[in-house]
Image (cartoon, rainbow, N blue to C red; front, side, top):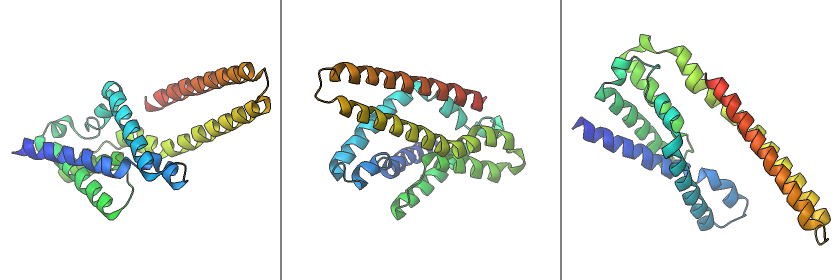
Amino acid sequence: MLVSLTIIATLSVAYASGANANFKGVASLFGSGTTSYWIAVQWATITTAAGCAVAIFGSSTMLSAFSGKGLVPDALVAQPTFLFAVAAGAAIANLLATRLGFPVSTTHMLLGGLLGAGLAAQPEAINLARLWDTFTRPLLLSPIIAVVVGSTLYLLLKKWLGYCSVWEGSVACPIVCSSQYLWLLVALSALGVWLRHWLTRLST
């Protein structure tokens, strides 16, 4: 019975996450009038599906983090009632926020479920250092990183498009714009490698 309830709670988390977070990634497309509502929904569906496919191969670290190991005692993590409490807490909070129209993060809901269940079971056993290193610090830094990376990409693309427009219509346009495009790809790749290296060092 408990296994069935845990599966239902887990599926509810996934449902609420899709209902709440799916459109947020493309909200600017619709809000700015760049696309219609249904085109934005299609983009959201395609990109979410692509993200799910990538997550199958690259989500081991996140799965390990949200298993609760290290944050609460291993004996508590192994209890089916603890797993159900985490899933149920995250599902109820996410479904309620979605119904009320509040944009929320499923990551925050799961973290709240882990903390809530852990505090209810063994409040003195919560590993605060693990909480900061694995959850709180990345959640605080991720918006800052997003602003920096987004601003950098915007400036690079704006400069590149402006540079190409100068050569538009000329014989040299394909050569000049292609070389600029190549350097843009190199710069973006270098930025991605640096960010991955920095985030890896931050999480260790």
